[in-house]
Image 1 (cartoon, rainbow, N blue to C red):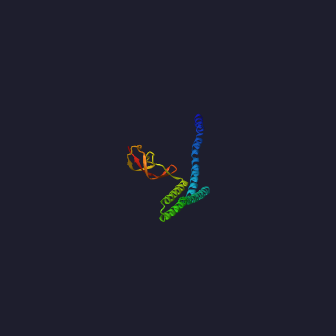
Image 2 (cartoon, rainbow, N blue to C red):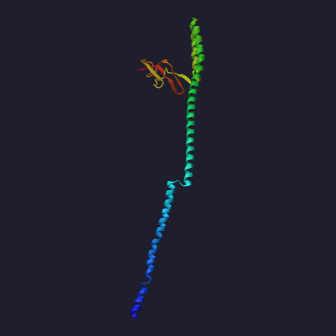
Image 3 (cartoon, rainbow, N blue to C red):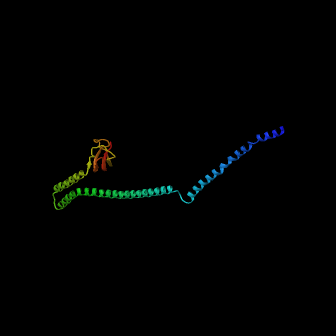
Amino acid sequence: MSRFKHKHGASEARTPAPENTAAQGAAPDTSPQDGASQESQQGTAEAWTEEEAPPVLELECARLSTELAAEQDRLLRLRAEFDNYRRRAAQDLARAREQAVDRVVLTLLPALDDLDRVTRQGASSEDLDALRRGLDMVAAKVTAQLEQVGVRAFASVGQPFDPARHEALSLSQLPDKGDDEVVDEHVRGYQRGDTVLRHAQVIVNKR
């Protein structure tokens, strides 16, 4: 009896062991399901990539293409407008130059008419004083016309020599004149405002 009870008790003690075995075997059962889910997601992504993009991406690409085309059209229009502006500006500048020349010529034509009349009268007259007076009148009229456009002659004789305004043709040695003093003028100098248009050709004294 004791031997039978011992064996029976040992059998009862070993009975829970199959439950542990079942628990250990149940853990790996979840991995095949997770693998199937990942394979399904990868298959969907590959299908979108290989066959066609999702509708949202297609709409975004279409929108960006439309915006790019509109921007390119705007840039082309701006370039055409700038080219037209540059062409008009060049034409306006050329026209302004021509009009400036025309104005100067028109101011000098009356003096040229007077000079022509004096020349004709001098050819048939022996009155040199009358001829001189006529020439002085022409010179005065030309000077007045130049002053109307801002051009005037500047004095040089008696002034210190200035390379910015004078061109020395020769030197003189006069004891009663200062050093570097302009003692004579061969060609008168002209300026417009502070800009020297033509240097005066002068003789400079050196002591």
